[in-house]
Length: 413
Ligand code: MN
Image 1 (spheres, rainbow, N blue to C red):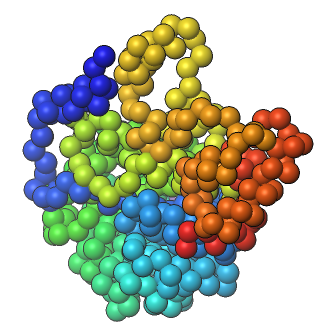
Image 2: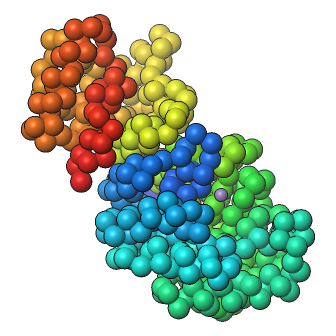
Image 3: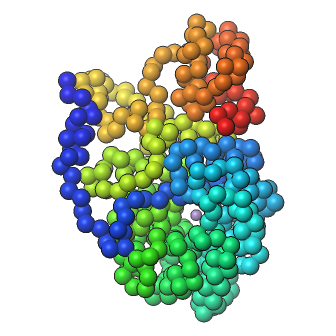
């Protein structure tokens, strides 16, 4: 039998690396995770301070480059969480969101002050619809606010991101204008959000190409995608953005976020891994941590992802029909385009029950993202045997329930 990995590498060896735009001299994709901001502000996804800190550590371990930790002006709680994350999570850049207002930017600056690497992310709507109906300001006023805010943010950190909210419904000439002003004012990342999930892959790509072409100094900044899934195209649009020159992707774990959610981090990362032949880009995501990260998030929010969720759903690697089972037994590549192990999905089918030992329990919890110390294991094993006496089959959710909430936070960090 041919080793599946051999076939994959043979395939990759034939890859032709496409030439990329001058601005994109680097093929490195920056992963900007907004699970703790766009994700957290959606229904059922509120997280406590300790949960946010635990999640931030996990995101940094996953290899996320920038963690948007919250919206400092929104509440004292948000601001405190960002500050704690900025102080304790040292191996990722910590971003704080701010409207284009002095008090927002100052609050954001205070919240990220302890960070090893910080970013202020300031945003202003650019579509006429938002300017007129929501902000009640003219285009000229918007230009002034954007420039002033980016300049102010630059006095606090050398890493400033500007987002033109509702960019995909903005008049293209005005989008060029406001982005140009933000770049001149010192923004180092320019985000082009598809705030309402309205764009299509081709249109979104054309928007990036236009900006790279028309904005003076575009080659010195990183362009960023931020896609919502209202039409189910968030990940497709994100990939189209990358192909057109964007080098940062904003996304969330399992795609949580406003309304239908954001582009799912694990789906973007898996697409870049599986289709390296068409998408010759590099990134820092540690693929085997995708599944444990999704499990930890599911513990903190009030719902788990659907079983058919790509990459991390319960059925993502399950095969029920006889034809598929036969194929997968002969060679997994017949029906699997990646191995479950490659994204951290546990493949051992050993059933945990009253006869299982503590070694097995330890291993399964580690696979679920909870490495335990010896004394923690003793304690959890004790609770496990009590549960196993009462319950025939023990599922992953039962195991996670055995960890006390405070323990889930403290473990591993
Ligand atoms: Mn959003």
